[in-house]
Each structure stands twice: as structure tokens, then as C-alpha cells.
Image (cartoon, rainbow, N blue to C red; front, top):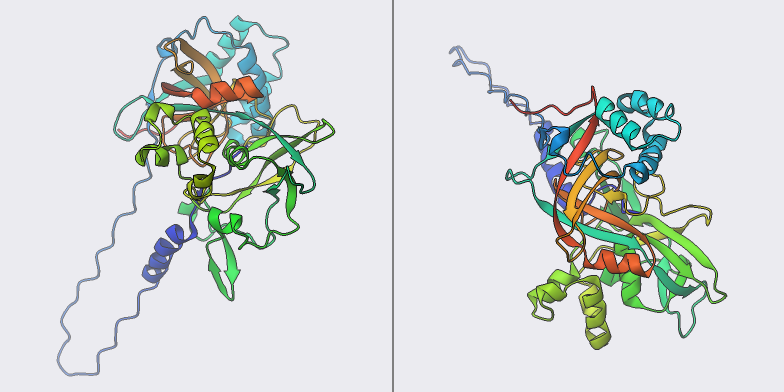
Length: 405
């Protein structure tokens, strides 16, 4: 719902590209005038060896290292896995294992455990500093009251993608930028960063006529953008699904962290509900706070027949069995064994999840966002979840990562 392939601010990428372009074609050395004196021998410039490929932060593991692997219920994870195969079945590394999944008719837990153990190899994920613990947060599909027309009650717009928003893919020229996209707009003959959140809210962007819906609460709209998808309840009681369509290219900044830094909230109060409560008490400060996060998400209306929001993989998410990850480390679609705890609890939460989504705030190796589903209770769990956890990626056999010696 996502939250998209990684976006970088335009200026953050263009500067190194300008440097690369300048280095790519050095000026020819001046030609020495004719002389009868033999020119000195000039050693050829040293050629730097090719840069080593980045090493994935994984370590070979064993099934017995996965907490409760022999006893957990794999049936809900199997449903999510089959969704991943819808997107991955034509990819070389996944063809065989996805084909075998079609041969299992109503498998029980024993058959599923054997399927994963025979077809996959577990690798534990580590952070760059060598630690195995990381942050596990939660997200959900919220419901907002709204309307297709602006009224006195519904006055905060939910925008479709602006017509002047450019999405630039430079991966064919610079392979190192694979999976990174630039967002911007034309200003004369120049490409400049797209408008930030404050600009959009202040009417600087050309968005008139791009309103999909109008909602009644600015904070709820802000959190809808963070979640990436949701449902709009119209005045007649009907529900309409909306999902992520694009993003303005600016980096995500946590407003909860800003409130803690300024002393407005204690760190334990900086949950989604805590921020909403603060906004109710300080409506006059809210616009300035929201502007601290320059990232802005644009939406599209989704078919009502979808069983769940679409993740970045392009398949419906599975409640409590899909996670958002950083695809620079974790392959989208892969099974990921997650060992964490329930929100605000020490009760173990160990289960096989599927990496089917991404998010602007989901950066790092041992980092995941747990999809809790739709509705108020899912929102409570998502808003409270800030747990520590460990992760293991299951790679199809024959497609394991190359590790450093």
C-alpha cells in the first residue's frame, strides 16, 4: 500500500549524477607542440579496480534457530505465500518452487513445513553493525468519513496524481540507481523537485480538479498517507477503497519524533493515538507540525472487489501475515520468519510472514512494518506496535545470496 519503490529527493540524486557525468568524460590532455627533445615518459594513469559488489547482510542459519518453527500454524502464511507466487511465478528463481506449491492440495502443517524446508534455505538478517535486533512497527487500513464533493464538514482533499508530477527512471543509464525513482516537475527547461507538503497544503501545486474525495479530519488524512491505503465511508454509508498511487519524492520525516524533540510529547506518548490526542488539544499548531514531514502521497480509487489493499508487490495483503520491508535488503515476495512480541507486551509473536509491501519510513536491514488489517482494532494494534525483533529470509534453494568470505 505502499508505499512505493524507494523515493529520493531530486536534489539528493542529481548532485552525485552531475559528479558522475563530470567524471565520465575527462577532458583530453593538451597536445604538446613539436620539439626535438624527446618527451618524458609519462606513466599511464592508474586504473582503479572495479568496486566490489555490495554484500547482503545475511548469515546462513538453520531451521531449528527459528523460534517455534516446529509448532507454529503455517496455514495463514500459506495463503499469503500463494499471493506472492501470483507475482513471482514467472521469475527464474521462483518458477520451480511456485509450481510445486500448485501441487499441494489442502496441505496440513506437516506438509507445509516439509515444503518450506525442502524448497528454501533460511538466512538470518543482520544490521550493518552486526546486530540482529531491529525495529518492528505496525500499519493498517483505516476508515475515514468523507465525500466526493467539498462541504462544510468535508474540506480536506484526497488528491489523485498531479498531471505535472514527473517520475524519472535513470536505471538504464546508471544501473546503480535500480529501484530508485526521481520525482520532480518542469520549471521552464529545468527539472526541479516537486512541491513539498506545505506547498501542496498552501495551494501552490496545480491540483484543482484532482480531488478524489474530501475528508473531515486533517490528522486522519495525514495518517492515511502514512498507511498507504484505506476506505472512505461516504454519507450514504457505502465504502470506497483507495490506495497509494504516487509520492512527491520528498523524504519521510516522523512528526512523532519532532513532538518528542520539542518536548510536546514524551517518547512513550508518541504513538499514532498520542499524536491524534495532541492534535485535538493543539489545533492551532497542527499545520506547522504536519509541514515538518515534506512527503506527500497521492491516491487512486481501487476496485471494491479487492479482498485487501494492494502492496508494493502488486498483490492483496494478508491480514497479520504481510509485512512491509526495505527491498534493498529483503526481496519483495519472499517468506520472512519474524520473531518479535505483541504490541506493548513481552508475549512472543513468532510467525512466517511474506514481504509484500514497502514504505517510506521502512529503511534498514532488520526493519519491518506489520500489516494488522482493516478497522479500529487493527489501528489500535498498529499504533501501539514498536517492538524489537529478529528476521530470517527464506531464499529458494539455488537462489541463495552470495556471502563475503
